[in-house]
Amino acid sequence: MARLEIIKIGHPTLAKKSVRIEKIDDEIRRLARDMVETMHAAPGIGLSAPQVNVSRRLITVDLSVGENKDEIIVLVNPDILSREGKVVREEGCLSVPEIYEKVARPQKVVVKGQDLEGRDRVLEAQDMLARVFCHEIDHLDGKLFVDILSPLKRKLIRQKFKKKDEADES
Ligand code: NI
Image (tube, rainbow, N blue to C red; front, side, top):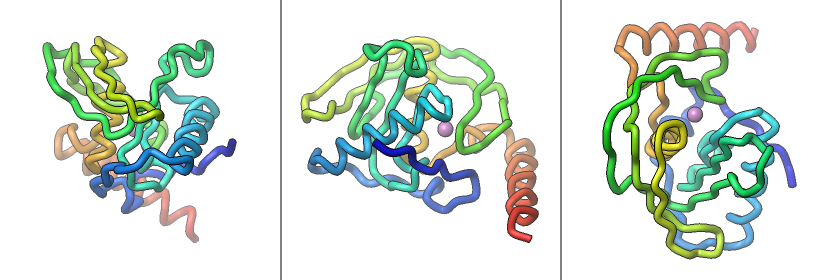
C-alpha cells in the first residue's frame, strides 16, 4: 500500500470530468486500497480518484476514519439515482485545506455503483453519508464544493489559493 499525494484547488485534474471505469482490474483495486490509506492518513471521511490526480470514476468513503473496517465504502462509477430533502451544514475538502463553508445537500440519496468485485451495489444514505457521496461524486464531474457557493465567496477562495501557490513557487 502507498500513500498518495492529494492535489489542491487550482490543479487542472480537479476541474476535469473523470472517465468511467470499464474494467475493474488489479490496478483499480490497488488504487482503491491506496486511496483508503491516503484518506485515513489525511485524515478525511471521503476521497475521490481525481484528488490523487487519477481521472477515473472511483470514490472511497469512511465516516469512522479507520476506526471500523465495516464502514469503508469503495464505489466504482457511482451515480446518484435520487435525492430527497435538504440540509445546510459546514463542509470542507482535503483539496481545499482550511476552508469550511455552509453547503446545502440532500438529506437522503440513493447511490448506485459497483464494488471492487464488479457487483452492482445500491446504497441508501442519509445526512453525513449522503453529503459525502454528493461531495465525492461532484469531484468526478470536476466540481469542488466551493463551486456551489456564491460567486463572490468562490472568487475569494480561489484568489486565496492562487496567491498561496505563487508564494510557494517563489
Ligand atoms: Ni473534496
